[in-house]
Length: 443
Image (cartoon, rainbow, N blue to C red; front, side, top):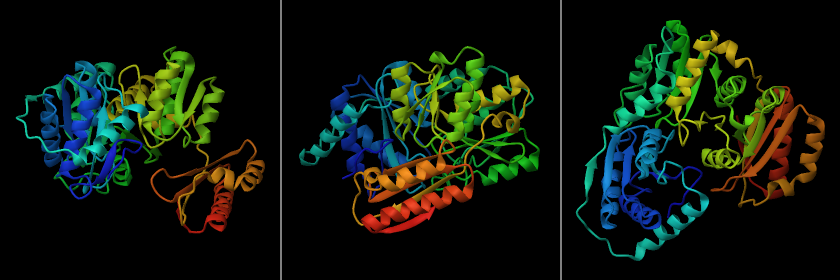
């Protein structure tokens, strides 16, 4: 049986995430959240339509009408949930390969589910295996027009402020393939597009936010000002400067945070980031008197912190950037528009803008242990203390267990690559010596 992870439920489409499981998850969602309606959208994977039919059947069994958006970015589904007060279901495995698929659920109002809601839905879902299948006639409404409303809303954030900017968009053969180019052109940009021909199996295939090398080469070849790579469902981005340099979520957030602070728009003068955010980001925020709240991994944790501290900006190194004043969740299109608007308004290149933050070399080592390790920090506390003393203020160590498999992750940041690698491997070996297993690799 599948479980909720940091961002919904995922598995191999049809084999692991079966149509029966998708149907029953929709039924459980309807029972727990009691929505007036559920809005459903999907990315470009070939399994999306089959899973959508199953989810519609599940909603029908519980007497809940559905609004079908078709192929749309995940943030557009959250937008629909926010605007119309519906629960939202996104059928997507985000940046995963085409053969995977998943389900993300948004509460009425567009926010991602809290822990308590997820636990209750999962409990109801898993208990459904013993229930008889009900076949009811679904009530289906066409909601494809809401994508245009979403596009207009995002466009209105920047207007026609991108006039004259040469942009290359890598749409990952995913859900942003049509809407992102249209919005950027409407904003005045000179747009070139790659990887915007989805065929059901080429989503995220050597393209998009997880593989931006092709985009970097295209930006250089065209002499463009900036490149933007989305992931398969469009909720995150990676940028490319005119030089071909990659600009990750940490840099994009740093640029936005300092700009918003200077304009008096950074509410409570703080941002929320995860434990994986680079130490260089923290130093940039310190230098600009901006508070930082640190959360566990996952943009769901970021959203909780944004609401708790009444912040308007947060995100992850991977490119989930949340502009809370305009959206309820991470949105690659919105973050891209605001980034390009900034470099246009400030009359700087992205290379110049990104220099506001200097990244520390960051090494991540995965150790596959013989059994699940519950508290690796406690287990190698002495070794961590010695390493932290060596690093002083010029480095950082994070050791954590995977929530889903027997894996321990050691992350080390230091002033130079050699030091980061040396300490990371030393701590990784300490885990192996204590718990057995092997080091799978570094990146």
